[in-house]
Length: 193
Image (cartoon, rainbow, N blue to C red; front, side):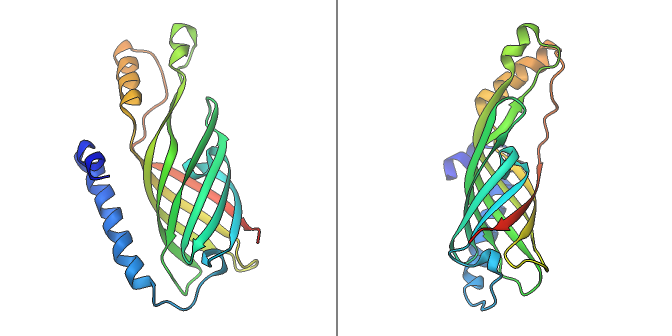
């Protein structure tokens, strides 16, 4: 992990180190909390629909709480080129309020290139895979305990294959999708256990 962080550019490496530091700091502090929302309780599961990397770009997410506040999840959906999928873990910080701050780590589809107009450059329409890190807010439902909204910001660590293809297309003058350094994720999750 440290070798990967060192190879990243400075802004991304600082973001990753900050997220990891916050996670370990708050995990130790959170062990004393007694009030646990059903959506964060060990053994509970959820099924969500939404947009963003945890949902396979546009799709669904299945999550299971392996421990209090620690959710293992997998998402599958349509990424505008093909089937996109991701899996990861999310740690929600204990809170007596309706919302809980969280940090997450993901591995899977984290970039796509879509070339407008087709032709020779259509071969560049491709999905790329790698790790991503994020933070967000889980807003627990007042009406149905265990259901929750999930709103997050995610920083993808894009692969060298993606960067090479992106640079080649950029140099060619072809129109293709814009590169966003931070991605948004929004979904609604239903308690299924």
